Image (cartoon, rainbow, N blue to C red):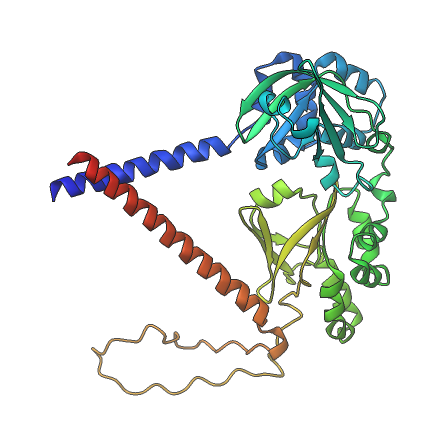
Length: 415
């Protein structure tokens, strides 16, 4: 029995060590990695200034193609805006792992790799892809997909943590007229055009026809985040939208915006209640942002929507697509004046020492007004919750199985 307890304790300790090692293997900090190499200090500084560093840190299986200070000086001499510099440097972040060994073992000599620039929504077509070519003699070249020549050469490996992150030194900046193109100031941004061009035209049309458009445009200067329902979602919602008053329509549209800039990494690290553009004093119009790993959800107490993609992410404006219309509780509930709360039922006489049931309400409270059928959580929301609960239970059972197996193995080793 004592041996079994020892085996269980050893198994638990072994599992804790494995989890610690696994967590350490996944975590990385590009700023700290590059800080050990002063020749990349300017490149490192601009990863922070452009907010690319947190985006790199939250991803796994990634390669950063760093350039030294002299090469960065050539880039900065072009006097590009900070947004154009961000686009250019995002071309140097490959969304796959390429250490020195893998670079020299590329199948068929070439590989086409997506970059972080491709995910921003600012890269037309395939302008955010890079070709890697493994030449004879151990040389490796890098070129943008639409380039006719090799733009930069592999110099050396800087830091590697297979197969999580690789930092490599390349000889030059990957030149891109698209990435370096001037970007409009926030006040000049065509928010409606951005949403319409990326699958949110129905929402954008409603937005353009309302007073909300002016509010969004004014906030774009100081900071703005928009959650844009995709066409199928807003099209299905249109009958309910048309039944709202003019003020209600404006509030609903403003409910899809935050008066601050929130990158994807910021959404994931700042979970909780957030005020929206519709928030006004006693009118809360807030919602909860929550994440589960890479999935970000928005919970309004009426519906839960998932962030499905990034349309635009350039400080001070971020635009994301969501799979459902955000319904504020302030608009989608039964009016207390139309649905009065039923009077509390008289309580039965009970002995003084009789225990009170836990579900009994305190004296003087009233039952909240019932929600109208349209405001009840949809079958889809219920299915999402059930799936989440089932998945959580399955994961818990899986860890119990792993723990039991390790404990049993440890017990056998101690016999």
